[in-house]
Length: 252
Image 1 (cartoon, one colour):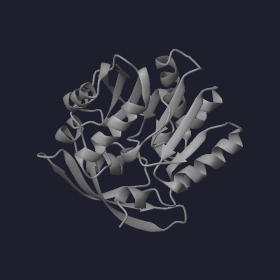
Image 2 (tube, rainbow, N blue to C red; image 1 turned 90 degrees about the vertical axis):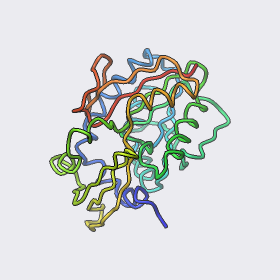
Image 3 (spheres, rainbow, N blue to C red; image 1 turned 90 degrees about the horizontal axis):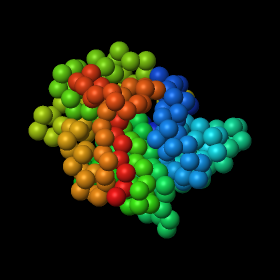
Image 4 (cartoon, one colour; image 1 turned 120 degrees about the vertical axis):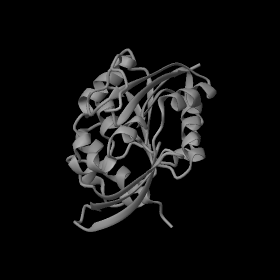
C-alpha cells in the first residue's frame, strides 16, 4: 500500500511546478551559493529533489549536483527540464531512509521538506538526517528546512493551506500536541485533472529538537532561523509566524 506522499507525487510533476512555493527558487539558490562561499568545486546532494528546481539552477551555475527522490514521476520530469536547460545533473531514484553512497559530498540540501517531516515515524525522519550527514565530507555543509511546531501552536494549518495559492485544499486537520503530528485530509488535482483525496500525517519539529538531533549526529555550527518562500537568510529570528524553519549546520 502506498503512503500518502507517494500518492501525492504520482503524476503530479507539472502541477507541482505551478505551486506558489516553487517561485522562490532563484533567491533560495542565491543563498545556498553564499553559504558555500561560491566554491564551485563543492559537490552537492539534493535530497528529495522533486522536479529538480534547485538542482537544475545550481547546475546552471556550474556546480556538480546529484538529485535523489523517491518518486520516479518527479525525477522523469526533472530529467526533461534539465535537458531543456542544457545542464548536467545526476538523477537517482533513492529512498533517503536507506540512503547509501560510495562517495561523500561537500554539501547537502533538503528543501521544502524534501522527504523530511513527511515520514510516518520519528525513527524514519531521524534515519534521513543520519544518512544525509553520513554522506557529507568532514566539514560539509547541510542546509535544510523543516516544519516549525511553533506555527500550529498559534495558527490554523488548515487556514494557512486553504489561503495559500496551492493546488491542495484541506478539509480536515487534527494537530496532536503529544506527538507534534498534524493529521489532515487534502484534495489535490493531478496532471491529468483527476481529483484525489489524501490522508496525510506530517511531523512538526521544535527548534530544540532539531538542534539536539543534529548535535547527536556530530554536527557543529548549528543555526536555526525563520524563513519564507525565497527568503532564506541568516539573522531572521524564528517566530510563531514561520511555517518552516531554515536549518544550517556543518558536519564535524
